[in-house]
Image 1 (tube, rainbow, N blue to C red):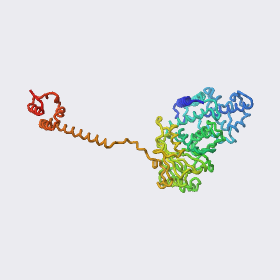
Image 2: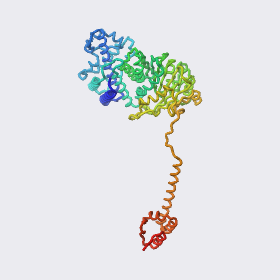
Image 3: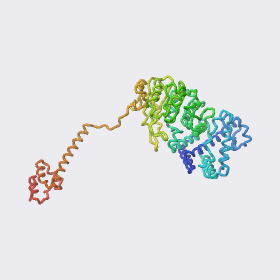
Image 4: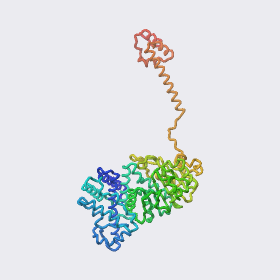
Length: 567
């Protein structure tokens, strides 16, 4: 496997290639072509390696599926669809199409035919839904690619060549190379970072995904099904694939996404992480109104649902009888569906399961229907932990979000753990980031249910209910006073000295003014009597150690009075 340094260098190279290719095309729109080409290459090479291993098992070595005739390959179509979920003719493999794409004047038609054939190969099989529409965003005749057919084909050829020449490894087993998946997630992250607000709707930063996966899997040893009802591109589910999935190759991944483009990205993400079609079920649709996995129970749920979106709510009277929402006796506000997602996830959670959900901070303390829903969650002891995250972690979202951890099973106490992780970050460019150390600080407090001054606090549920079911971390975790301590006695001494200096300066100023107005001689006599003649002489430029230089008889008399002698 590549070292972190090699992987980072590869990622930078991939991003530079992807960014330079697009020209005048909007980066957010162009992602479909780069990511789609990476996917096409992956499933082609993955299939070739799979066939090679089948041949080796039969005693045939060094078999190269890409050089097989289409007629011969057809004999294995049924087996490959059954075991891999799809089939690709050798002539339609990525390596064959990308070998010399500039020479194909009908490249747009070639690609269109290949993509249709791959999707059609799964028709009538268990993987049909998993393959349907995967290339729908790879629009070969998109006018954004160029004004003429020739221009569009030139750009498509450049994309294929760039992806062809990327060093993405050549191993696809469960424990080996994951470069394709890494590269895909890195590109999605970069596209999200450069897309602003729209990017945050489909990608959760990897370090947040990792923390959520750790929270949901802690003390939860028998995870067989993981679920995300607002799965975006699948970044949260993929963290489970890299942790729990390594321990349990039969782990099943479930998700639902309302955006068709993002839905496709999630399914592609599954393939690129070598998750077989039989092990994932990603559905397209509105989770709140038309849940595709209704009645399923999941051992772990991780989600970053959209913040404060509108939904039917009380405008749809049927929802009040929905088993997901009715237990609270009230529906989430029409303009803020946050807790509707929370109630949905609670319903789908297994009795021994754990859910870790990113939430908009307002759901923690707002009144009305949301307070009543929090009361239901607290009264039934479903709220395990509330974690305040740092601000500016998510793409397009500058506010500080939070994590709510829900449990249905037996709890160690009737308390809620509050963790203030708002200072657990490092600045990376324009965003904040959770380092491994930051994650560990939060996770360790969670796992141990530890009380740490200024960081974490266990609070009785009854106390929280009395406080209007307020779940805001700042209401319970004392903030450390980082202001500089002031020594009052020392400060008073400094003030007294300053006042003395001010008074002395004021008196000198009076004498200066008096001199300018011609009354300085009388004032000089007064200073002499008060023993301040030296200060006066300094102020007006007279020498102190020598005989004062003056011809004025009156001044001479004054200085004689002060003890000076004149010839």
